[in-house]
Image (tube, rainbow, N blue to C red):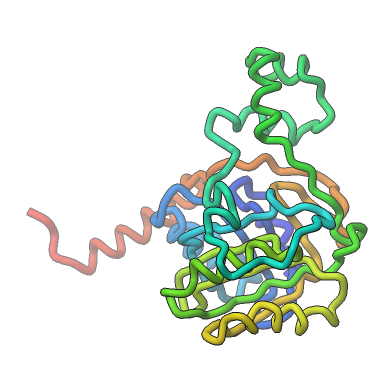
Amino acid sequence: MHDVAVELAGEPHVFSVEHVTGARGLVLTCVFGGLAELARYTGMRVGARPGAAASRTQIATALHMDGSRWRLDRTSARPRLARTASTAAPGAGSSPVRREDQALVRALADEPRQSVAGLARSTGLSPTTVRHRLRRLERCEVARGLSGWPVSVSLWCSAPPKDTARIAAYVSGLREVRLVASLTGPHNLLFAAWLRSVDDIHVFESQLTAPFPGLTVDDRAVTLWPVKLAGHLLGPAGRRVGAVPLEGWDPGAVAADEDALLRRLRGRGTPLR
């Protein structure tokens, strides 16, 4: 499992890799240019990797809250059920990293402590542009084991479709929560949270489900080792040991396998005239 984790963590389109408890060994968060790329990757890359026994795929149809908006020991009142998705998670579903930012992100991944002048030289941007983009991209992550919130838990939940927006807004306001996403598949909501201890997991679940009788927690996983987070490679204690700049996946890596599969597929049908 660790061999698979390390190899997949080295791929630039893989945002995070987590070694977890429960029914799965690894949870990967990836970014693709479309469904065809996802099909190629899961079938021809992950599925063909020695050591990978099986995989399950879910698509995030909406991102209501992500870790970039989480604040260490933030102080806020208990969220109210009347809050809407827009007020609970401003900018939900958007990403601060744009195509024009990618060169800057790669330069920062190589050496995060570069000066503005150094970044301007390496990216070809003006110092003013670099400063402006840095203000938009600025984010500081912490080693979870030293944050006071050492336990990371992911919960796959189900709720009536008519209630998901209201539930997502409420959960996005909880101080422990770092991710709220709507999913395809049998579980239509995913919540990820950092907690003080393993003992807090059941308390946290009760806090989620008490206001919403239709919400059920169907599956859960505790992260044992966050191998990769936001492109950064981490040791078992959550400390940074390296980085892989985030980029799109190059389907050319499986071009030969795809061509072979298409030849077989064509052979099953009637030739086109």
